[in-house]
Amino acid sequence: MKILAIIPARGGSVRLPGKNIRVLGDKPLIEWSIDVARKVSSIDKIFVSTDCVDIADICRQAGLDVPVLRPKNLASNKSSTIDGVKHTIEYLKGRGEIYDFVLLLQPTSPLRSADHVRKAIDMVSSKKADAVISVCKCEHSPLWTGSLPSDFSMTNFLDEKFNNIPSQELPVYYRLNGAIFLVNIQRLYEEETFLLSSNSYGIEMDAMTSVDIDNEIDFLLAETIIKQTAFSAF
View 1 (cartoon, one colour):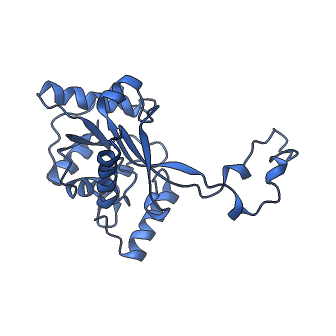
View 2 (cartoon, one colour):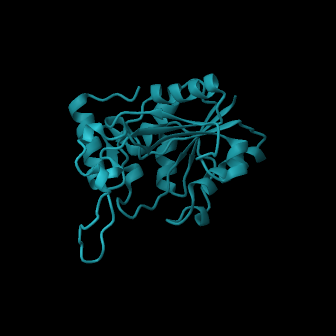
């Protein structure tokens, strides 16, 4: 199978401006995902989808070709990731480049390793899957969560059957961590989602490598992990 790795990197970020080019460790955030993709030999092409000239320049300085910028109408806060991915696929198709799977590597997951990506690709092959998506265990059970009314009354906040159960005895829940989405392109077009309705599997990552940078606290956490563990993405 031919794999197209897309690294989506909009220039705008409401909660953490300029995050994709902010230096994490010894390099801009986006370079962590570029370097991981380069270490995976079964990836056929790496493509950065961005609307930002500064991001494109940093990627070119890192040795990556950025032949086209994403149109502004596909780069707003309300634009879907899928539309940006499809723009890249169609652009490359127009150049005669056809791929079977798209691998979405969001730059906000810098601690995802090349080995995680290799395992996802191996799982697609071994299970003949149409999608493999990274997950991690929930930090807190959703069974201990609930909504509150405007007066914050906690009456009936939780289902009574969970009130006195120790946390370690609750069922294990997983969440998407945003690090890896490896999806068959034909199925992606058919269903307009990375979360396919069938033949899709999860690959587990631990809490440390699942850090997803959305705000300043997330960035500081990733920075601390890198400094304290001599972290290597390879």
